[in-house]
Length: 230
Ligand SMILES: [Zn+2]
Image (cartoon, rainbow, N blue to C red; front, side, top):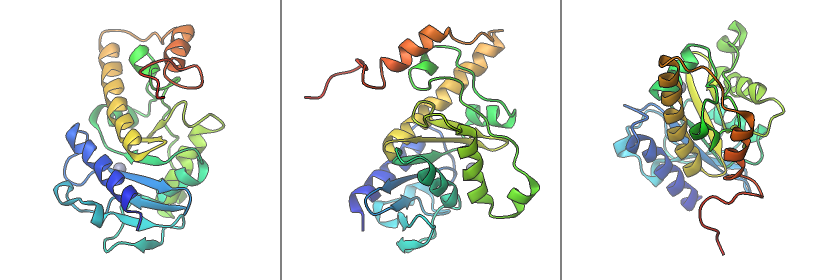
């Protein structure tokens, strides 16, 4: 079932290893088939070297396993909340990458300090509020997804396609699983540069005109970065 998406999601998970964002079994990527409403996600606790398209797990939007022999990632319900809230996305990634997680543990968003940030994120990457005791004790993973959605608020989720889960780590999302994983790589680099900027005493956000110019030359109807596809 969903063989092409299984391949994409497996490949995207392995990108996290390739770019040094995860160790052991940390992190996960999923992808959704919007036509069927089914989500393919990494199995729980399976080492990356054993991942293959066949052991990816297919779940429905209520979290029920539809196809697969393994249990899905423990973070599955968080991914599902994001798919339900953001109809334009097709992939979600979660990691504990070092610098992005450091900002999350400092309970801080990542300010837009320069054009590397602006090329991918149209403003500060937000950090969520602290979760309540009831949210933590209850359906924790669903509540986690809801708090991320609450943080994005009315903004276009593809203009700032990431959030830091307070005390925890980053989530990114995009049109495809591969793109979501690539954004996790980009986010980590942006977080690393931001931390270094602050170490050098820099705290000034990028000029808003420069932020806008850099974001929109790569995104939206007026984009002109890269090669046009015939
Ligand atoms: Zn986590």
